[in-house]
Image 1 (spheres, rainbow, N blue to C red):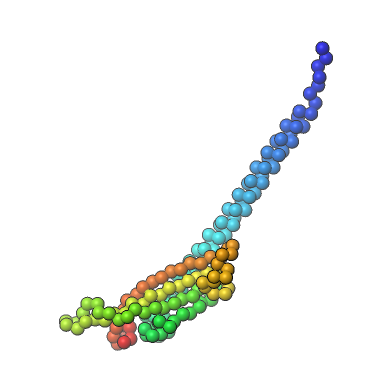
Image 2 (spheres, rainbow, N blue to C red):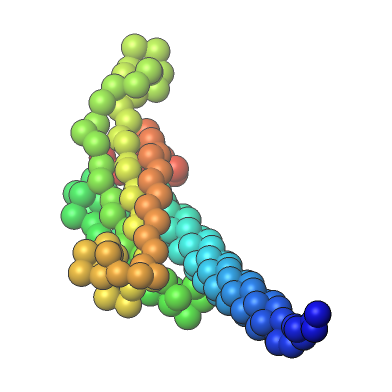
Length: 165
């Protein structure tokens, strides 16, 4: 009996191996791109969060310091400022101040009620150049927004460190 030669089996095996290696390479490339995008978004998110923290600090200064623009309750309740910190973080921050009604809290001296005022500072930071919050681009890819709030209380009076009446 004559044996048939089996030529071509090596070529088929090589093609199968090449297809498998190509698929693995494509999967690794896709994973690498996804990881890179995720890492960039993490960095941008951290920058926006730091911008929101800076907005809180700025707002507290404006509300509590004697030369602050939100020193009185009326100025605080009408106060909204947009800060451009894009040079440092690529972000914009909208800071809003809201004052509570004055209410008694303890005594400033025996028999004299101490009145206090609450100040709520809200900072909304985002990576949009059109201010924050920006509903027009909020659903787009890459938009990042972070909100931070702080509440401070100060006694009402004329002494240093007190809120003006």
